[in-house]
Length: 176
Image 1 (cartoon, rainbow, N blue to C red):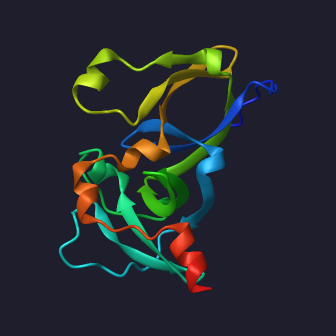
Image 2: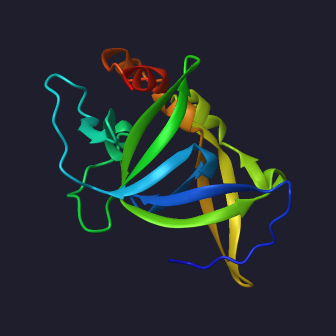
């Protein structure tokens, strides 16, 4: 894991970064509820292939999806570095909780909005609305890395999600 020293100011936003197919992605840290090791999943019949199953998280049933499959990236076997990121998202005005399987945790980076470059136009054409932009982050004086920043809420804009009924936070609270 890289230790990144970057000045944090009131305008910077923190992004939790993770690895997927050798690329580094970032999600607004405020969307993340927790990071878990991959555990046994209860498989749901007839679910889209990217929905690997559900877990019971403190009494709430949380769908877990494989980000590689959602992004149409070649799947690989899960290993000890594979983690599940539990996200709170807003889907059509409802707060919902979903888990995403990623290859590995990377870091937390403070990124100034002025350092975020627009996504390439090709991303618009191929339906990659979930990409906010790209940020170049300095690792040290001579080396930097490019992070693909994702909009957690837009991850669920796929037509495949019409087949998946996510429990809302409100539904979970009503049960308690």
